[in-house]
Amino acid sequence: MTQHVITRRSLAAVALDVEQAVTEYDNARAWLLRAEAADATGVADVATSGPLAAEVWVFDRELEQVLLVEHRWRGWVCPGGQVEVDETPREAATRELLEEAGVSAQLLAVPAAVTVRSYGPGLAATLGVSFVAVVDRATPLAPEPGQPAAWLRLDEQWQGYFPEDRLRMTRHAAWIAARRSY
Image (tube, rainbow, N blue to C red; front, top):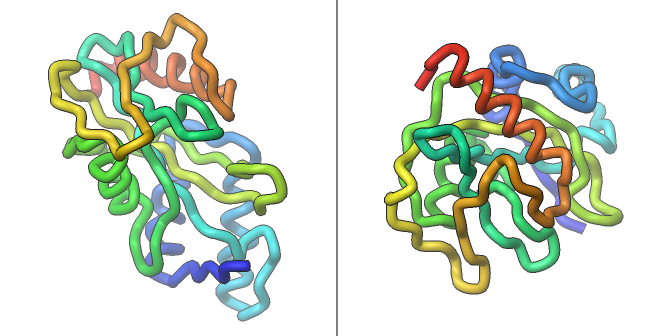
């Protein structure tokens, strides 16, 4: 079993992301409080010793489509992955978007959401931060081999490991549109 280390730099950054996020799901703030308590006392909590995750909800300029990658067993998911040692969630999201879709984009200042979820059967719950980028659909894509990337409509279903994500992204796209915040 891989030991994951959440450094103080990463923990401080995720604390700010959690505080600023537009939406909280799955009692993510309580997860973070347990992680901060473990950091202060040196006593690790099983739920907080796993990795942090970061992803990017990449919307087109019309806020009608989202860029997803087709994971080999999770189906269509946002570009994202594990926050590496001493990396911030924002840095991880930017890196993962480039690695998985070949897209370099400026992330919006405020994270869209924080969530706690398991990324597979038997895997520990992980705190994840969802960032947002708005890009032109004509942006060239260069996905990883064997993991295609595509624009999918928010008003149509897709097959993915996290079926609730489409509604969450649709709500956030409406939130952005109402504020014209991109």
